[in-house]
Image (tube, rainbow, N blue to C red; front, top):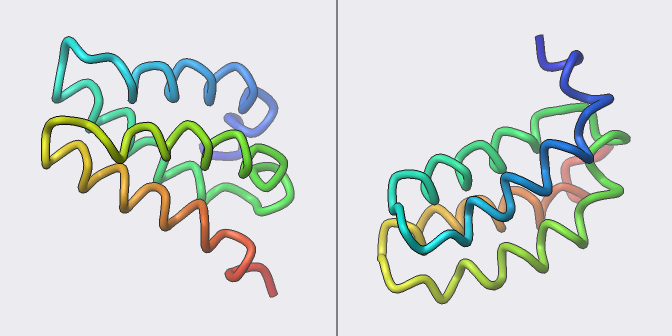
Length: 88
């Protein structure tokens, strides 16, 4: 249940952002970025406080040497960037 994750966002986001920047595994980086995309589906009021932190970390992933990782980073960044636009 996604609602069970909400109280633990702080302890989940930091490791995901770190995994997204690890250079030893492309599949690990792409999965971390995909999970970061899915985090935007959680309730707005719980994820919005982390928006600036996540966007700053995702900006570093945009320079990844692997195209597949850069693509996932763009998708994740777009989800987090448009987070405020999706709030009614």
